Amino acid sequence: MTTTKKILLLGSGFVARPCVEYLARNPTNQITIACRNVSAAAACGAGISSASAMSLDVSDTPALEAAVAAHDLVISLIPYSHHATVVKAAIKGKTNVVTTSYVSPALRELDAAAREAGIVVLNEVGVDPGIDHLYAIKVIEEVHAKGGKIKEFYSYCGGLPAPEAANNPLKYKFSWSVRGGLLVCFSPAAVLKSGTTKHISGAELMNNTQSYTIPGHPDFTFAAFPNRDSLPFQKHYNIPEAETVMRSTLRYQGFTEFVVVFNKLGLLDVTGQRKDWLVDGLEWCQLTQHVSGAADAEESTLISRINEICVFSSEAESKRIADGLRWMGFFSSQKVVIVNDNLFDTLCAHFEGLMKYGEGERDLVMLQHRFVVEWADGKQDTITSTLEAYGQPGGHSAMALTVGIPCGISCQLILDGVINTPGVHAPYSKEICDPIREKVEAEGLGLVERVL
Image 1: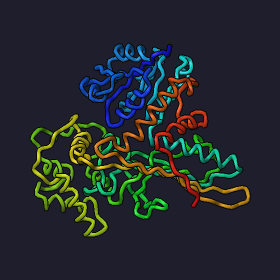
Image 2 (image 1 turned 45 degrees about the vertical axis):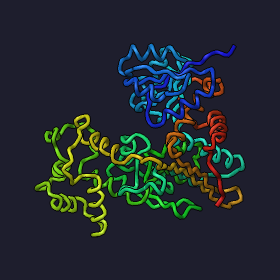
Image 3 (image 1 turned 120 degrees about the horizontal axis):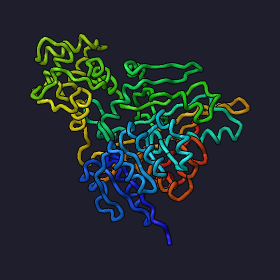
Image 4 (image 1 turned 90 degrees about the vertical axis):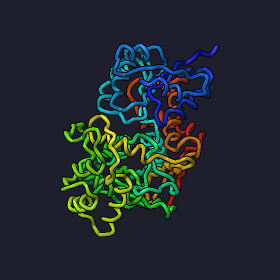
């Protein structure tokens, strides 16, 4: 008889459903979806007979530990700040763990305890991070096997509206966490460029944006800015010979200038500090007056003050930004819905309603690696590895598919014993990458390689 495998999924957000659907293909899997809001959990598993819902607050340690211990594997799709709490419960209950988030220092500290407990804690198995690792490792291993060196490594990834759906001033809509989508725009970063290490503060990130055109796709010219800390990937990917290592986020051109404005107005304050004037009944024009220090809340006054603070490159650019801020409601008498008593969460909630996908609209995940390779005879080649994935109108978004399916694949490989080395891991080795990549390609989510 085949043993039933019990899976606990924490979270029911944008990317959870494709993961559940993938795991439900195996009739021996029983999936429990857990959220604080049990109706959200039930909606995530609707129509899947092997899925059930429960209410769970991860801050309730005894309840979390009991739920985790009752399962063979736990998937943590809740905010990354909770992952260490989940892993600690999993160590106690000897339950395997999968997350799609980067391995944090807090998780690294749990590696020895995870190994002692005999559990696999596999992270970074979404799209970025996730699918990107699978193909970086593949190409690098193949180049090294042929005696070549990786002189330059670039990775670009963006979750974007499909071109026809990029129909607002930011040319952006949210197919995943609004908070995450904004945080990446002002997180500190570091890159290795021509042998020199460069550290970039969050406040300066948007000023380090460069234009990037996808080779072979002249219609796809993006704004690319550094994605967090690229430096560890020289070691993770085993490319000590590389003189450039740079991982970047993609947005359509014209987006990053708005983020600079938000930052200069103090709208991206993540400290959670309460402003005395942030009270119920506040209008958006009044909020803009407060953050800008304008004399009054009239639109002309607000625009004039924003021009003083931001100093745009031209009158046309000033008008473009003003038109965009008007579309976003910053000059309107619309009432502000205050969230968590702080500006950043209030802005996130406002954007979630304003920049969501309309019926029939598609999103796009664009991922490309570019490797500059030097062969033993001195010849150089540029190799690209590219994924261009679109959402399904009326179905899943590309973001949900490219995160949820690799996550589900990774879970199944652990349950099947294919990935079985205890400890805290990410897909940086052939032993982990190869089996995941084989299944990813079977789902039509593989990258296409070209030599330019």
